[in-house]
Length: 499
Ligand SMILES: *Cc1c(COP(=O)(O)O)cnc(C)c1O
Image (tube, rainbow, N blue to C red; front, side, top):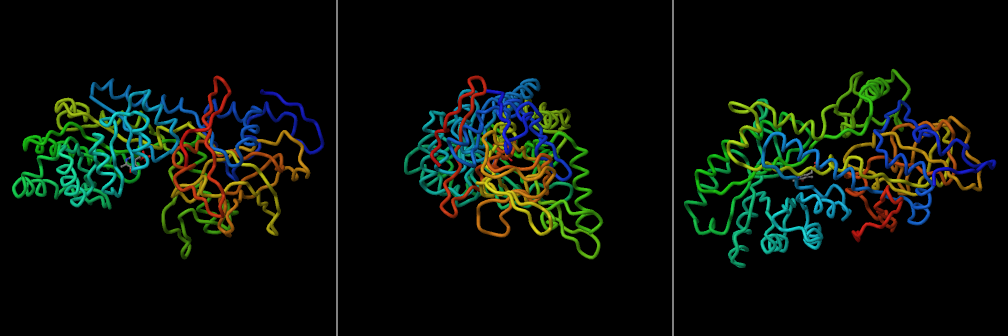
């Protein structure tokens, strides 16, 4: 599988399949992807072109082994700290059912964000107590399904709470609920959120309920307190935990059977190998926006920054693709942070409270990539090239302005009708939606060996959000297929998720 012998005029250089997968495409200022062995190996084999040929472009290729490793590492940290702990994988970060199956095998829980996600997880025979529903908007049908299946409802506001009570009374069951809380004080200011009950209002609210309609509380088991904060700031999470520990004591003293503290997701991860590259990229980009350097982005796109009278305003609208403390190490630092007379772990153990979390993106680190076929190359009057792919930008996209990780280029092993471009060209990847802004890379890329039709571009590490969160079917394009690749057998199977 791992060799090829093509020596015709327009085919790729013969060292193709043995050379570094990263050597055919580099950012103008490189942002070198962290590599996962199964991804590098697959990108160097003839299996990948065959898969794209079979399933179409773009193709999402996934592997659940890194997921198991990432989740297990979290349990190991918790175990070393002697705390009761459970992971609820936030499956909205990737729709493939393979991860639901992997979660089931690991025995971890799943966080669901819609009735469809919940129905699929229930159909996978994951028990209700291993499922939490944190959907931002919960229909009556969703609340009913949670109740009937014993799924914990993360209650966001009073309407949801009262609706849950009414439905619970109708089916004559108690609802397991966690209250979602927000508005924590952090460094002298209140963290704003559209989600959750305000931390300062929850006790008075529950007190009023106990006083005015004790009957309604008969239908609620308040078994958890929950937060999920925007961003990845560890200190903000510590502020929230510190605030919730005494709240848990207070709730328990009022006979609420609180069993767990759920700190949500937002565990940071790292896409890049080098902090220096990341810092250099941003320093140079800033100078370029001020006209002091050649531009690194399409039409000098700011990536969140805007030059105004010689300075830059705004902040980078991009995921922090390089972060030094990530995943299990970051989590360990939370548990060993100071709290009361000891550490957070001590405070949790003392209360015999279970800690839960809902990581999505970070446990999908290393679990997938997106491959798309080059269909054309054209040079702009500026000299930059546009490389057209059979793919649109919703197929590798989050709220980040750009995917700040260098893609790989895999030269076609089949001969093409047209010659490769000259070596050493640079430019941008563009997609199939008919708008001027349809770029797949705002960052300028260099192609030391040129680009040929039929080459593949691989966006590495896209399993967390990038491949699914915003994908759309405009122009009637079908959604990308998702194959689960087994690197031991070198076989790939379509994931069972239908859309
Ligand atoms: C999206 C979400 C998560 C997962 O967040 P990540 O950043 O992917 O870890 C967890 N919990 C809730 C409530 C969410 O909305």
